[in-house]
Structure formats: C-alpha cells, structure tokens
Image 1 (cartoon, helix red, strand yellow):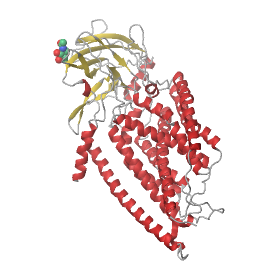
Image 2 (cartoon, protein in one colour; image 1 turned 90 degrees about the vertical axis):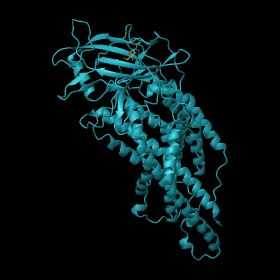
Image 3 (cartoon, protein in one colour; image 1 turned 120 degrees about the vertical axis):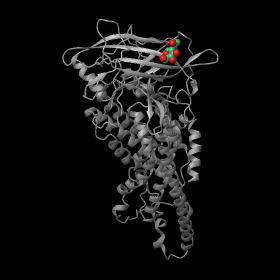
Amino acid sequence: MLLSILTVLLLSVCSQAFYLPGVAPTSYHPGDEVSLFVNHVTPTMRYQDDETKHYMYSYGYYNRRFHFCVPEGGKKKQSESLGSIVFGDRIFNSPFDLKMLENTTCNVMCKSTVPKRDASFFSKTIRAGFQYNWLIDGLPVARQMLDSKTQTSFYSSGFNLGYVDDLNVAHPYNHFSLYVEYHLRSDGNYRVVGVTVMPESRVQADDSAADCSSEDSLPVSFSEDGDSTITYTYSTFWVPSDTVWATRWDKYLHVYDPKIQWFSLINFAIIVVVLSTILVNILLRTLKSDISKYNEVNLDDDSLDEMGWKLISGDVFRPPSNPMILSVILGSGTQILLMALITCGFALLGLLSPSNRGSLSTAMFILYAVLGLPGSYVSGYVYKFFQGEDWRTNMILTPVLVPGVIFTVFVFLNFFLVFAKSSGAVPFGTMVAIIAIWFVVSVPLSCLGSLLAIKAKPIQLPCKVNQIPRQIFPQPWYMRTPFLSLVAGIFPFGAIAIEMYFIYNSLWYSRIYYMFGFLFFCFVLMLITTLLVTLLIVYLNLCNENYKWQWQSLFLGGGISYYIFAHAIILSKFKLGGFISVMMYVGYSLLLAVGVGLMCGTVGFLGSMAFVVTIYRQIKVE
Ligand SMILES: *[C@@H]1O[C@H](CO)[C@@H](O)[C@H](O)[C@H]1NC(C)=O
C-alpha cells in the first residue's frame, strides 16, 4: 500500500515533465493582429447520449453545405506537415479580425443563406455532435468545463456547431464570444495563453443593426420551407491572465479522473511484478534442476521419459513451415515496435509538443520509413536462423509485403472518405509523397539492413537437427495455439486496456494526446507481460514435446489483437452513423489490432528464440 502511494506521488511529479511547451512563442504588442484559423469540423464522442449515431469522418470547414462566412479575398490554406495532413488537419484562414487588447462587441461577419437541402445536412451534423475546431496562436479555441468528479475547471478543445433543444429542434450557433487570455511579460510583450468561447444561437433582425446583448433573443432555427438566413457575429474580450506561456497547455490537457487511472495501473503493475518474479523464479529453478538432472542422468539411460523438453533437442531447431513469411512478418513487427518505442520516447522527452501540430504523426511516419533498416536486419537474421537460402526474396519481400498491405487498406478506406466528401480524405499529392518517401528512403535502407544480416554471423545452433522429424503427440484442445493465444492475449491487454480509450479519443475525435509517460509505462508493461506469458506457454509446450514453437510464439504474443479489436467494436456501442462510418471504424480498428499484434508477436517470438537457444545450450547432447 505504502509502496503504491509512493509510486503514485513519484509518477505524478514526473507527469509534470510529460509534456513540454515546444515551439517558440509569438509575442504581440497592443493592436497587433492575432489570427484565428479554422480547422476541419470533426465528430465527437457523446457518451451520455445513447440516441445519437457516431460519425467517423470529418468535413472541411469551408464545405459548401455549411455556408460558413468566407474571408475577404477567399480562403487560403495554411501549410501543414505531412503527418498533420494524413491525420486530417485542414487549416484555413478566417474572416475574424482580432487585435491584441482591443475588445469588440457584435462584429458582423456575414449573412449566410442556407438552402433547404443544406439545412438538413447542417442540422444532421449538429445532432451528431460535430464540432468547430478553431485555433488562435496555435491554441485550440475551447469551452470551459467543470469536471464533476474532481470539481476542477478545464478547457475542452473545440465546441459544438449548435445544440438540440427539448423539442428536438437543432439550432446552429451564430454568435461567438471569444475570451482570449493574455499574459503581460515584464519586457512589455503580450502572449496568448488561453482561448475560450461562449457560443450562442440568436436571431438577428434583418433590417436593424446586429444586437448581441439582449437576453431574450430567440435561437436560430432552420426554416421548414425555403432558405434560412443566419447572421454570424462575434465579440472579443481580452482578459489578463497570470498563466505563463510555458504552462498554457496545462488546462487543455485535463485527465478525467486521474487518480483512478494511476491506481488501477499501479495495482496492475504490482500484480505483474509479483507474478513475473514468481514465474521467473519457478522457471529458473525448474530449468536448473532439469539441466543438472539431465546432464547427470544422461550417463545412465534410465529415466529419459521424464525429460520433456530435452527429448526434442533434435527437432527444436527444425525450420518451421513457411520460414520466409514468418521472418518477413517478424521484420515488419520489429519495425513497428521500434517506431512505437522511439516515438513514445521522443514524446516523453517533450520533443513532440501539442502546439506543434502533426509533429507526432510526422515523426511516426519518418521513423517508420527509417526503421526499415533494423526491420530488414531482423527479418534476414531470423531467416538465416531458419536456415533459409533464398535471401533475395527475403530482401524484396520485407519492405514490400506488410507495408504494402497496410497501404492498400489505407487507400481502400480513403476511397470511402472521398465518396463521403469528407475532408479526411488524403489528397492525391500527399499519397504520391508517401510513396516517394517509401521508395527513396525506406526501400534502400531495408536493402542495406538485409545485406548487413547476410554479413552477420549466424547463431550457433546448440543442437543438430535430426534427419527424421519426430512425431508430435496429438495435443488436447487446450494446448493448441488458437486457444492458447486467446488465453495469452488477456494479460498484455489488461496493461493497455485503459489506455486504448484515450488513444481512440485522439484518433477518432482529434483530442490531443499527451499522457506519454502513462502510455510509455503501459506499453512497457504490455511488452513485459507478453514476453513472460509467451515464454511460460512455450516452455510448457516444449515440456509437452511439441517442438513447433516458432509460429506458435508469434501467435501467442499476437493474441492481444483479438482483444483490441473486440474492445474497439464494443466501445463503438454499435451506434455508427452509416455504412461509411462502419467501414472506417472497422478498418482502422483492424489496422490498429494487427499493428499491436505484430509488435507483441515479435516480442513473443524474439524472446522465445533467445530462450530456446539459451536453454538448449545448457544441456549436453552427444
Ligand atoms: C475587455 O473585456 C474584458 C472582459 O470583459 C475585461 O476584463 C477587460 O478589462 C476589457 N479590456 C479592455 C481594454 O477594455
């Protein structure tokens, strides 16, 4: 108990360092223009309301059907990083005119006319809980919220397009009160440290000047027949704040109920540590006595029956079926695993901050391309361990097979987005850029990795492989790989389950993800659990004289993917809005499950390989 409290304290101190301010601050002087940029309109998760359907794709802000106000001189796209484009950001300028320290009230942006058919689209997006995503000085425009459990206020990025009243009528917001918090530094510079909005829906009379103050204004409704007119207005208030620039993200990065999370995780960690200590102890002790017994008993050939795993020393290094495919999969698994670990490490060090949009996804993409080198190395090395001869095919298949499948699924899903006129569809130019990076960076590095693996010294097999394969007894159902991998998957999934909720939130609803300390911790825990469970089951199987551990260890480690996929499907509560949302959701959940499965399967295999080589080195075989 004391230990867990201490750990909580320690970790919460560390968590202060989990995100860093990142990019260089912008200083303003009174009267300087502060731009407001508009990003895509995204769906949100609405947990309280079970009636609404969830949509899985976003729309561009200037999608024609919304009829939002366009800036004078037309919309202009802001430049973005590759990762930010792939993950859906579409940032444009806006007609807002904000000047540092100049309060304004009731500026009229434009009068927009929404025809009947677009009104039904607009009202559908309001009902589904779609959100505005605006940015001022890199900060998302947020709603101020109160966490009912901890009674702390925090900023929730983005705000709804409108609201649905008690009579189930949708009203779009058309008046925005922006509260921009600034910090006056001792050197006389002003910095933006927070932006909140109070959106309202109010009818404006056609003839007189816009009025944004009257209390009893009616909300805007879409006209049943014919066009609806919406007048968009805004007010700006500049509010002094004590928050310094370096900590301006703190209020945005609010964790719901942090205590419960940490506690459950730490409890889980303690269970893992205790279990693994016991496990490693037993394993070591059994192995030690096994080995010493074997080395003694070997002199008189009496009790060879009890030997279990030692009996199969002549078969345990027999190459598995399809050694090529297995080694290629392991290479790709290594690539994804290293990418995840290094990205998480970078994020931990604060190199990828939330204010640098898309830095995380860009880093992931670049890392994935570069890590083709170690990936191919592992692929080639394992292939050699399987006594494979056809290294040319291995060299070509490794950078092509798994990434090719991932890319094909990605392109396939992209077609649905294009069809839905979603802004999330990745533009053709970006696709070409991705393919170009692939062929210019990743493929050559992969080939280099393969060549290094060919040059590398192969593992000395401790036992020779017999000419004739030994017969494996028919295994009972509970010792077969499908069942075992289901069992093995539960444990690592336990480590990552809490985290998945946050990952989905940032994946689907463009929430900022920042708890990298937490993620890293869960991730490492997941890998350790995978390794231990796989080793245990592989050992039991070897004792059972089943020497086919190679594919089995991959599937044992990869067992987590069933749970990740099932969990994702259950989380959606089967309330997805339309066929395209279903396709997107299932497609990306599948990709995620397979990706995590590949990582864990690789850990399972490489761990088992080291384990098997080590234990068979200890016994004398003549
Ligand atoms: C602008 O409005 C805010 C909020 O009402 C107020 O605190 C601030 O003093 C105003 N600033 C100026 C320059 O009037």
